Length: 272
Image (cartoon, rainbow, N blue to C red; front, side, top):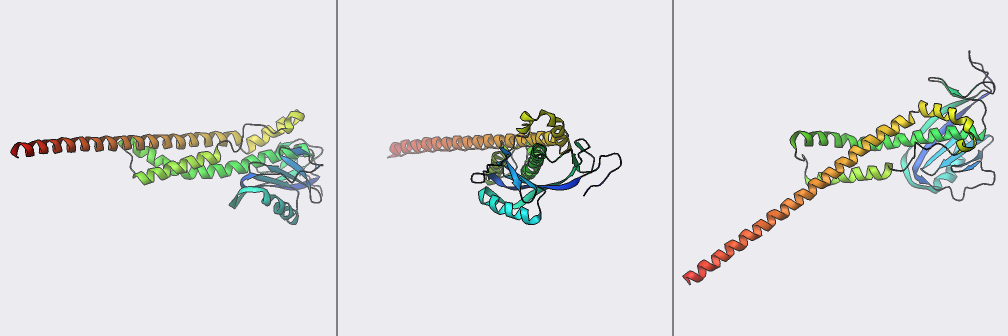
Protein backbone atom coordinates (compact mmCIF):
# COMPACT_ATOMS: atom_id res chain seq x y z
CA UNK A 1 0.00 0.00 0.00
CA UNK A 2 1.48 3.32 -1.03
CA UNK A 3 1.06 6.76 0.52
CA UNK A 4 2.22 10.23 -0.33
CA UNK A 5 3.72 12.87 1.97
CA UNK A 6 3.90 16.48 0.67
CA UNK A 7 7.42 17.16 -0.62
CA UNK A 8 8.31 13.48 -0.57
CA UNK A 9 8.27 10.68 -3.11
CA UNK A 10 5.34 8.23 -2.85
CA UNK A 11 5.93 5.58 -0.17
CA UNK A 12 5.52 2.09 -1.56
CA UNK A 13 5.37 0.35 1.82
CA UNK A 14 6.32 0.70 5.47
CA UNK A 15 8.31 -1.78 7.52
CA UNK A 16 8.93 -2.03 11.23
CA UNK A 17 12.50 -2.67 12.40
CA UNK A 18 13.16 -3.98 15.90
CA UNK A 19 16.56 -4.40 17.55
CA UNK A 20 16.59 -6.62 20.65
CA UNK A 21 19.53 -6.89 23.04
CA UNK A 22 19.11 -10.47 24.18
CA UNK A 23 22.30 -11.04 26.20
CA UNK A 24 26.02 -10.47 26.55
CA UNK A 25 26.94 -12.51 23.46
CA UNK A 26 25.25 -14.29 20.60
CA UNK A 27 26.85 -17.28 18.90
CA UNK A 28 25.23 -17.76 15.48
CA UNK A 29 26.87 -21.15 14.96
CA UNK A 30 24.29 -23.56 13.58
CA UNK A 31 22.16 -20.81 12.06
CA UNK A 32 24.29 -20.39 8.93
CA UNK A 33 22.42 -20.57 5.65
CA UNK A 34 23.48 -20.96 2.05
CA UNK A 35 21.33 -17.97 1.09
CA UNK A 36 22.72 -15.67 3.79
CA UNK A 37 23.45 -12.11 2.64
CA UNK A 38 26.21 -11.63 5.21
CA UNK A 39 28.20 -13.66 7.70
CA UNK A 40 29.28 -10.78 9.97
CA UNK A 41 26.64 -10.10 11.01
CA UNK A 42 24.77 -13.21 9.97
CA UNK A 43 21.91 -11.82 7.86
CA UNK A 44 19.17 -13.66 5.98
CA UNK A 45 15.57 -13.50 4.86
CA UNK A 46 12.91 -14.83 7.23
CA UNK A 47 9.14 -15.18 7.23
CA UNK A 48 7.19 -14.11 4.16
CA UNK A 49 9.37 -11.13 3.30
CA UNK A 50 11.31 -10.26 6.43
CA UNK A 51 14.98 -9.67 7.17
CA UNK A 52 17.09 -10.72 10.17
CA UNK A 53 20.60 -9.69 11.24
CA UNK A 54 22.36 -11.31 14.21
CA UNK A 55 25.24 -9.55 15.97
CA UNK A 56 27.81 -11.28 18.15
CA UNK A 57 27.48 -8.62 20.85
CA UNK A 58 24.04 -10.02 21.70
CA UNK A 59 21.66 -8.15 19.39
CA UNK A 60 19.09 -9.50 16.95
CA UNK A 61 17.55 -7.05 14.46
CA UNK A 62 14.34 -8.04 12.69
CA UNK A 63 12.71 -6.06 9.87
CA UNK A 64 9.30 -6.63 8.32
CA UNK A 65 8.35 -9.65 10.41
CA UNK A 66 4.94 -10.33 11.93
CA UNK A 67 4.79 -11.00 15.72
CA UNK A 68 4.47 -14.74 15.07
CA UNK A 69 7.43 -14.71 12.67
CA UNK A 70 9.51 -12.79 15.23
CA UNK A 71 8.67 -15.40 17.87
CA UNK A 72 9.80 -18.21 15.54
CA UNK A 73 13.14 -16.46 14.92
CA UNK A 74 13.70 -15.67 18.60
CA UNK A 75 12.95 -19.26 19.62
CA UNK A 76 15.98 -20.37 17.59
CA UNK A 77 18.20 -17.41 18.41
CA UNK A 78 17.72 -17.48 22.19
CA UNK A 79 19.25 -20.97 22.31
CA UNK A 80 22.54 -19.38 21.19
CA UNK A 81 22.58 -16.42 23.57
CA UNK A 82 25.37 -16.30 26.16
CA UNK A 83 24.52 -14.44 29.36
CA UNK A 84 20.83 -13.83 28.60
CA UNK A 85 19.32 -10.68 30.11
CA UNK A 86 16.24 -10.85 32.31
CA UNK A 87 15.11 -7.55 30.78
CA UNK A 88 15.41 -7.35 27.00
CA UNK A 89 16.23 -3.86 25.71
CA UNK A 90 14.75 -2.91 22.36
CA UNK A 91 14.95 -0.16 19.75
CA UNK A 92 12.19 0.28 17.17
CA UNK A 93 12.14 2.26 13.94
CA UNK A 94 9.78 2.64 11.01
CA UNK A 95 11.16 2.31 7.49
CA UNK A 96 9.39 3.95 4.57
CA UNK A 97 10.31 2.50 1.18
CA UNK A 98 10.06 5.23 -1.50
CA UNK A 99 11.61 4.07 -4.83
CA UNK A 100 11.48 7.53 -6.39
CA UNK A 101 12.94 9.28 -3.34
CA UNK A 102 16.31 9.48 -1.61
CA UNK A 103 17.66 7.95 1.57
CA UNK A 104 16.80 10.39 4.32
CA UNK A 105 15.63 10.72 7.91
CA UNK A 106 13.13 13.42 8.78
CA UNK A 107 12.89 14.73 12.36
CA UNK A 108 10.39 12.55 14.26
CA UNK A 109 9.70 10.73 11.01
CA UNK A 110 10.48 7.34 9.49
CA UNK A 111 13.75 6.29 7.92
CA UNK A 112 13.14 6.74 4.19
CA UNK A 113 14.91 4.30 1.86
CA UNK A 114 15.00 4.08 -1.90
CA UNK A 115 14.58 0.32 -1.67
CA UNK A 116 14.61 -2.57 0.76
CA UNK A 117 17.76 -4.17 -0.61
CA UNK A 118 19.77 -6.31 1.82
CA UNK A 119 22.64 -3.81 1.68
CA UNK A 120 20.46 -0.89 2.79
CA UNK A 121 18.77 -2.98 5.46
CA UNK A 122 22.18 -4.05 6.79
CA UNK A 123 23.18 -0.40 7.20
CA UNK A 124 19.97 0.27 9.15
CA UNK A 125 20.45 -2.88 11.24
CA UNK A 126 23.99 -1.84 12.17
CA UNK A 127 22.85 1.55 13.49
CA UNK A 128 19.93 0.08 15.46
CA UNK A 129 22.08 -2.70 16.94
CA UNK A 130 24.69 -0.22 18.13
CA UNK A 131 22.07 2.13 19.53
CA UNK A 132 20.27 -0.49 21.62
CA UNK A 133 23.56 -1.88 22.93
CA UNK A 134 24.79 1.62 23.83
CA UNK A 135 21.55 2.16 25.76
CA UNK A 136 22.28 -0.84 27.95
CA UNK A 137 25.90 0.19 28.48
CA UNK A 138 24.83 3.74 29.37
CA UNK A 139 22.52 2.48 32.12
CA UNK A 140 25.14 0.14 33.56
CA UNK A 141 27.87 2.78 33.65
CA UNK A 142 25.49 5.48 34.92
CA UNK A 143 24.47 3.25 37.84
CA UNK A 144 28.11 2.99 38.96
CA UNK A 145 28.86 6.61 38.02
CA UNK A 146 26.04 7.84 40.29
CA UNK A 147 27.85 6.21 43.21
CA UNK A 148 31.37 7.15 42.14
CA UNK A 149 30.67 10.84 41.51
CA UNK A 150 29.69 11.83 45.09
CA UNK A 151 32.51 9.67 46.42
CA UNK A 152 35.04 11.45 44.22
CA UNK A 153 33.64 14.85 45.28
CA UNK A 154 33.91 13.93 48.96
CA UNK A 155 37.44 12.63 48.46
CA UNK A 156 38.42 15.88 46.72
CA UNK A 157 37.00 18.00 49.57
CA UNK A 158 38.35 16.11 52.56
CA UNK A 159 41.27 14.15 51.13
CA UNK A 160 39.99 11.11 53.01
CA UNK A 161 37.87 8.17 51.85
CA UNK A 162 34.41 8.53 53.43
CA UNK A 163 33.59 4.83 53.42
CA UNK A 164 34.64 1.73 55.22
CA UNK A 165 36.90 -0.87 53.66
CA UNK A 166 34.08 -3.21 52.62
CA UNK A 167 32.17 -0.39 50.88
CA UNK A 168 35.36 0.62 49.05
CA UNK A 169 35.93 -2.96 47.90
CA UNK A 170 32.33 -3.17 46.65
CA UNK A 171 32.74 0.02 44.63
CA UNK A 172 35.98 -1.29 43.11
CA UNK A 173 34.18 -4.49 42.13
CA UNK A 174 31.28 -2.58 40.57
CA UNK A 175 33.68 -0.36 38.62
CA UNK A 176 35.71 -3.29 37.28
CA UNK A 177 32.52 -5.17 36.36
CA UNK A 178 31.21 -2.17 34.42
CA UNK A 179 34.55 -1.87 32.61
CA UNK A 180 34.52 -5.58 31.73
CA UNK A 181 30.96 -5.47 30.39
CA UNK A 182 31.35 -2.31 28.35
CA UNK A 183 34.93 -2.29 27.05
CA UNK A 184 35.22 -3.78 23.59
CA UNK A 185 31.63 -4.99 23.44
CA UNK A 186 30.59 -2.75 20.58
CA UNK A 187 33.02 -0.91 18.31
CA UNK A 188 30.77 2.06 17.57
CA UNK A 189 33.45 3.81 15.53
CA UNK A 190 33.69 0.90 13.10
CA UNK A 191 31.54 1.13 10.00
CA UNK A 192 29.52 -1.88 8.79
CA UNK A 193 31.36 -4.22 6.43
CA UNK A 194 28.73 -3.72 3.74
CA UNK A 195 30.10 -0.21 3.08
CA UNK A 196 33.28 -1.73 1.64
CA UNK A 197 31.23 -3.08 -1.27
CA UNK A 198 28.68 -0.28 -1.32
CA UNK A 199 30.44 3.03 -0.66
CA UNK A 200 27.38 4.79 -2.09
CA UNK A 201 25.61 3.95 1.18
CA UNK A 202 28.12 5.94 3.27
CA UNK A 203 25.77 8.93 3.34
CA UNK A 204 22.88 6.80 4.62
CA UNK A 205 25.06 5.43 7.40
CA UNK A 206 26.28 8.93 8.31
CA UNK A 207 22.67 10.10 8.61
CA UNK A 208 21.76 7.14 10.82
CA UNK A 209 24.89 7.73 12.90
CA UNK A 210 23.79 11.34 13.46
CA UNK A 211 20.17 10.40 14.09
CA UNK A 212 21.07 7.99 16.90
CA UNK A 213 24.02 10.12 18.08
CA UNK A 214 26.22 7.05 18.10
CA UNK A 215 29.60 8.81 18.27
CA UNK A 216 28.46 11.37 20.85
CA UNK A 217 26.97 8.70 23.11
CA UNK A 218 30.04 6.49 22.77
CA UNK A 219 32.30 9.44 23.66
CA UNK A 220 30.25 10.35 26.75
CA UNK A 221 30.18 6.69 27.79
CA UNK A 222 33.95 6.41 27.39
CA UNK A 223 34.56 9.51 29.53
CA UNK A 224 32.32 8.23 32.32
CA UNK A 225 33.93 4.81 32.18
CA UNK A 226 37.38 6.42 32.41
CA UNK A 227 36.31 8.25 35.56
CA UNK A 228 34.82 5.08 37.06
CA UNK A 229 37.98 3.09 36.35
CA UNK A 230 40.19 5.97 37.53
CA UNK A 231 38.29 6.13 40.82
CA UNK A 232 38.68 2.38 41.25
CA UNK A 233 42.45 2.80 40.84
CA UNK A 234 42.49 5.57 43.45
CA UNK A 235 40.55 3.35 45.84
CA UNK A 236 43.00 0.53 45.23
CA UNK A 237 45.91 2.87 46.01
CA UNK A 238 44.13 4.02 49.19
CA UNK A 239 43.60 0.43 50.30
CA UNK A 240 47.25 -0.41 49.57
CA UNK A 241 48.40 2.65 51.51
CA UNK A 242 46.08 1.80 54.40
CA UNK A 243 47.39 -1.76 54.47
CA UNK A 244 50.99 -0.50 54.42
CA UNK A 245 50.23 1.92 57.27
CA UNK A 246 48.65 -0.81 59.38
CA UNK A 247 51.59 -3.10 58.67
CA UNK A 248 54.06 -0.40 59.70
CA UNK A 249 52.04 0.28 62.86
CA UNK A 250 52.06 -3.43 63.68
CA UNK A 251 55.85 -3.58 63.21
CA UNK A 252 56.32 -0.54 65.46
CA UNK A 253 54.13 -2.10 68.16
CA UNK A 254 56.12 -5.35 67.97
CA UNK A 255 59.42 -3.46 68.21
CA UNK A 256 58.19 -1.47 71.21
CA UNK A 257 56.90 -4.64 72.83
CA UNK A 258 60.25 -6.34 72.28
CA UNK A 259 62.12 -3.35 73.76
CA UNK A 260 59.85 -3.32 76.80
CA UNK A 261 60.27 -7.05 77.23
CA UNK A 262 64.04 -6.71 77.01
CA UNK A 263 64.03 -3.87 79.56
CA UNK A 264 61.83 -5.96 81.84
CA UNK A 265 64.19 -8.92 81.59
CA UNK A 266 67.22 -6.71 82.35
CA UNK A 267 65.47 -5.21 85.36
CA UNK A 268 64.46 -8.65 86.60
CA UNK A 269 67.99 -10.04 86.39
CA UNK A 270 69.44 -6.98 88.16
CA UNK A 271 67.09 -7.43 91.11
CA UNK A 272 67.35 -11.20 91.02
